[in-house]
Length: 234
Image (cartoon, rainbow, N blue to C red; front, side, top):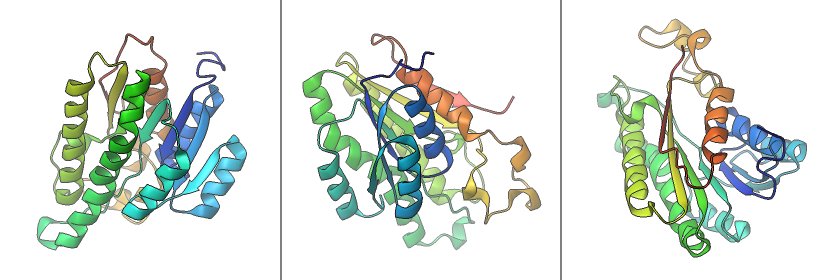
């Protein structure tokens, strides 16, 4: 992959200040893409955007008004949309409140839908675009303590499948990337190393592995759509 392989292409990455989003942003920038990054933490986002010569738009994707403001600021549809921002708070079903379920759905499913719904018409008019959804092993496999997160990620996979069906032949490519556990700061409070049934952090994927899958998908010839990538630790 040459450093200029994405030259001239624009990309929007949600949750772009840390973890998977940061790794994706760094790799896309290294390959020539011009970035717009969204995240809640304005200070961290500003630092990352400065390092990558990217545009920073502070945005809490759980807030519909924030998303509307971000979309207004983004303006023209990007060439690449990476719906990455996520909420992961595992707890048993009987300890999962309706509010917790709603919060997971808002961040992991409703927000990606809102971005796609707003940007898709302009991609259609242009006849090109890449929509990348960062899923999870939980979008196709059930785990205890995962009622809210699993439901939201299964919903994201369903949204991807509908897009894949509706958009085939339009020039718009859609990719769902479903990694196993990824070693990011989302695990800091959970401490999986000390909890039975959780994957130790030393055995998790790195964010760079997910970023490489994103780059692989968006770098294919325009007549090739990488529809699904499932990643696991070898």
